[in-house]
Length: 171
Image (cartoon, rainbow, N blue to C red; front, side, top):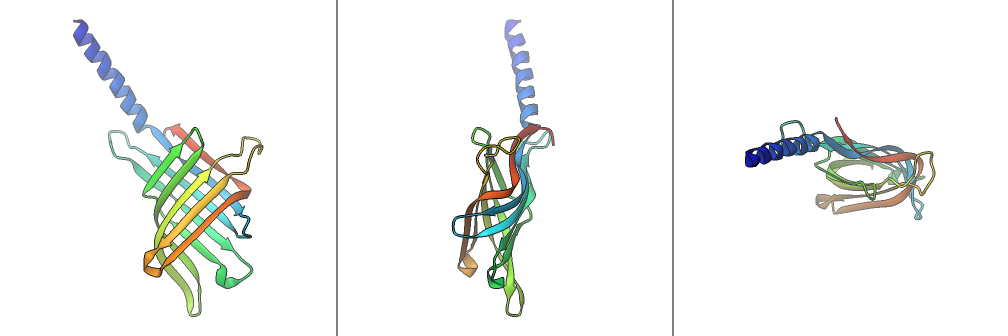
């Protein structure tokens, strides 16, 4: 009798744990402007998340990322877009979110816009506290396109706007 009760209680606990995992959503949202010590700056917008649908054991990813490089010279301006991440990871202790996926870089060319396919890795740190106090949020990205021998990187602080790294139950 006690053995059956323990099995039933164990099954209930496991079902609750699975339901909680399935209902957990992690990711990051934000928009604003960032700059670094090298004089580079840009505008960004991001909304990425990782979730599991009820009854599924597979993580799903959704969202987007966009970076628009600002420059006095038109030839140095570009836009990077990621339509959907293929991986998202969050550490809530450090409030860091990392994500990556296929991306496109669009820049002006002599005969019109040039589009370059590549892969983008992004890391954001939510360091600003509610009310705008604390250290500035951080954003770091790397765009790689081996076919075009291209490795672009940015590592800077959010000067305007905010990044929020989250973990919550629900959609």
